[in-house]
Image (cartoon, rainbow, N blue to C red; front, side, top):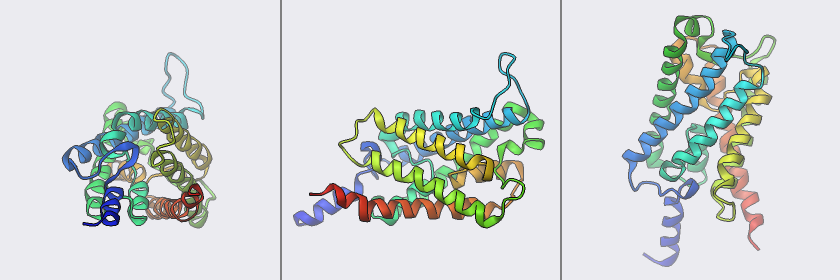
Length: 252
């Protein structure tokens, strides 16, 4: 194996946040499952509580609660498992990295299955926490376009906010010049902003499995395809833009 081939192989095996892809797929898969479950449980749990007007210490959640819950949960997940699996916890991230050659395609199915399973577990956790009202009245915070929002508008919004998230993820998680402590904060903040923007329009999935997990458990499949196609397209475009244009600008 010559030097160029060795360097290409090393780049392909280097994961986000210093993880080493493929060294222990069982651990990586478990980390993706658990991390996604935490993200979905935290975010949908707060969203369900807000929908049901369940108070905390006598005060109900306001409109800030759900975006902050998702963002802080992602921050915690990235800090906890980033070094193990890369903390993708989102098919849009996994597919974006694979399309640009930064994640091996042979590992993609395992990551996607783990992420979907984790999202279902997280939604089940929300159901356990809030019982029948959480599933029947709040649909476990399953996403759906707001009244008056058409499919194309919802699709574009989901694509745009996911573009922002994945662009930030790839920017801070693949550049050694970014301080380790900064990356989780930046990624969590990007998701928070995405949910703030998209929440009133689409419910703010910014992640196919965040949408599908609660849909599967609650049986509410309103416009499910929007939350599959929009984030994946946005994530792949973000990865390609960063790889083809922004990364090149870093090189003298």
